[in-house]
Figure (cartoon, rainbow, N blue to C red):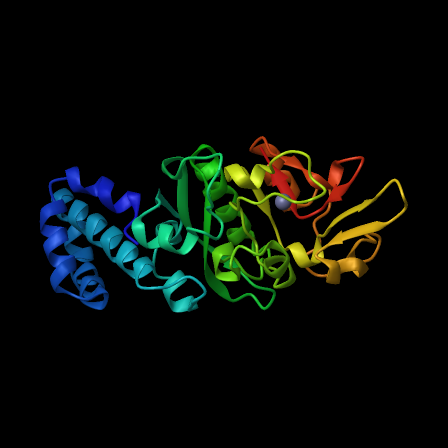
Length: 274
Ligand SMILES: [Zn+2]
């Protein structure tokens, strides 16, 4: 998907030429052009500007060539500006076709125009770089890009980041797959009000290891996902665990989010909302 940053470059002197070059030449050719022009750029400011624009175009074209779920080789992340992989755009017809009837159902309290499709990078436990995607409210989209870019730079592990529509909008299935997600219009039997997820204003991080938990007045234990019962006990050490004061917790709080792990009547360790 074309990024906002790419669109923003259209106003520059070189934009038209770049557009044409990008259409005709593959990314590797763009890189070779950059390498050829770099020595000249030291002598000529105008050439330097062209190199910058070509380099940006190559980064964005490269980012566009990877699909969500793809692994991005180190040769790519060390060559290109990783900012090109962190983009936010309005929901287009292709993305909405995935959402319609799944995460976006009749009665949804947020207009689709107020949602954004985010593409991001994240690392898994082995350190691989993966392309992630997320639908979020436009009011928090830029914050999420900053938070997830900082987590990526720090090597913070996030196993999976796909739209919940790939799980047919089934939150339990998404959590069981340890999928990090944001927007989903759903109403749970034990919830009296609509979740912040229905507005795209809440994010669940590594949910299999950071479950929702509460005890009913009758003494019944509710754990979501159900398979995460062993992670209700937060005294142990295990992968993907979110704790008060860790990088994930700090970044979300710095951006004005509240953590479900600090709730008193229930605990939702995966959940950050604003
Ligand atoms: Zn949540």
